Image (tube, rainbow, N blue to C red; front, top):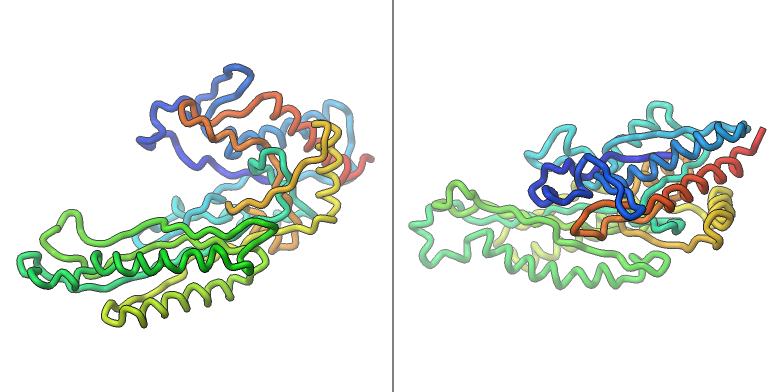
Length: 336
C-alpha cells in the first residue's frame, strides 16, 4: 500500500485562510479537516489503523503487509529552469521504491476514489510547442507586429484548439466509456522586466491524457505529427515541438483476486458491492504495474469540494475504509 505527500504546503496565497488546507487538523460535525487528509493522508491513516486492528484482534496473517509512504507522486516534472528535487513527480518515489527492493505481489492504492474501484486510469503526455519571432527593440516594431512570437502564438493556439477535439473524440483514445482530455496548461513568452524587447520565442504547454491501452510511443508520434502539421501551416514561424513527460496509465484485470477481495470486503462493511470508475488523473499504479505489481486504486472520498473550509473527510468513512482494508488483507494473505 502507498501514499504520497501533500500537494500544497499551505503557504500558497490561494490557500491561506482556508482552515482545511492548513497543517493543523480540527474536527467539526463528524468530519476531520486538515492539509492532505483526503489527498491522501486519510488513506495512510486507514492503512495504519487497519494493521493496528488486526494486531489488536490477535489476527496473524499468513502473508506480509507492506505499507509504503513515498513522495513525488504528484503530477509535476522538471522543465527548463524549474529543476531540482522539488520539481520531481510522476511517481518519483514509487519508482525509487520498486527499484530498491520495495516490491510486492499486489498493491491496494488508497487514492481518493469515492469508495469505487478504479480498474484503470489515464496516463499523461506533456508537450511544449515553441513559436519563434524576432528579438527587436519595441521602438522599431511599427509595421512589424507580425514578427512578434506572442502574436504568432495566437494563430497557433487557435489551430491547436481545432485539433483538441480530434484527440478527445477519437474512439482510440477512449477507455471504459471515458474520453481523453487535452488541457492547455501554460504559456510562456517575453520578458516582464524588459518590455522594450519583443520575445524571441513563445512556448505553449499541453497536457494530453492518454488511455492505458495506447502505447506512449504511438501517442508521442501522433502529437508530434500534429506539431509538424502546424509547422507546415505556418512555415515562417519556426515551430518546434518537444515531448518532455510520458507517464503511462495503468489497468488491472477485473478478475484479479485483489479486485474480488475488495468487492467482498467493501460489501461486508458498506452493505453493497463497490461501483467501478475510470479516472483521468495519474497515480503511482503506473510505476508499480510496470514492475509486475498489479495495483488497484480504491479509497475514500476526494473531500476537496469544500472551497470555503478546505480538505475534509467524514470520520465514519475513514473507520469503515480502514476496516475494509483489514478485511482485504485477511482475504489476500490468508490467516495463519
